[in-house]
Length: 186
Image 1 (cartoon, rainbow, N blue to C red):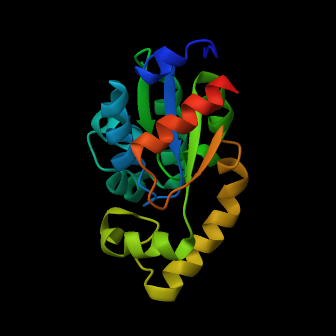
Image 2: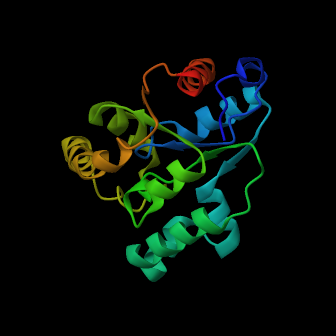
């Protein structure tokens, strides 16, 4: 899929295939994904939006109606059966890498980048978005930080299987492109 001899193609945005951005909710996968896709000339896809379009309801509504188990099964199906273009940047849901064989599937079908942030930073970012996120609705302040800390402890063994682990603080599309190009040639 990646050819180390194609440095010029990598700089022109060719040759990377599918790039999956993973990390906890609030890590910036969608924002960074849009910028990276624009920089590379790739299509951008947010799997949460693909899920919502296919189901005709928000993830929060689906969660409330069918529960987390049903959501995780369908989320995995969306990931693994979606028709992807040859080159795309894909933002995933925060829990998606941690269920079934999703992380292995993403690593086998593209490049994975874990956008890593500290629990307090994530809590600060998520404080005003809790209504849209079913797992956070009733948590505030230190309880939110504690919840994120515990979830990260559960999820990091999966997140750490990513091809690239990047510090999410001040991470830019340019830096991600450098990391991808370096990884492809090493």
